[in-house]
Image (cartoon, rainbow, N blue to C red):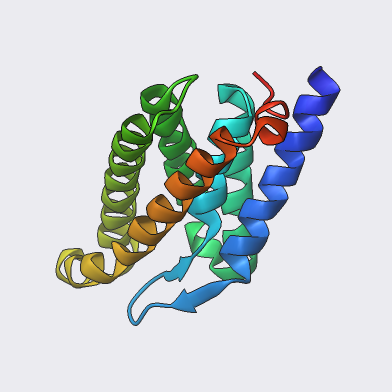
Length: 165
């Protein structure tokens, strides 16, 4: 089972990395909008917590190594905690409302984490605050897509049998 878990975690790490680094819309000040967080939520659905957290953190950090290297250390930490928050709130049986609460809490954490990182290390507090509104589009879109994908997967017996729990 460990080999299968590692293989699926590596697949999700690659999905997070590719959809973060290559499927994106740049933002005016810092960062970009991408679909990577959708796969973070799906990793949390299909994998056990440690594997989901590792795949999410490493996939996001690798994407930043390619696209915005300065963000890689921050993404490693922020996305690991984001996946942990979603896993803890959504739980083993992620109902619609548990997914909504988990995605909302994880998104708030992500926005706060990048706001602090941008403020302290890159653009200052006021510029980071201006970019916060644009930054919030990405987790909102990914949360909606992730919740819809998870709820769809819950209704497909074949996909439910592929969960590694």
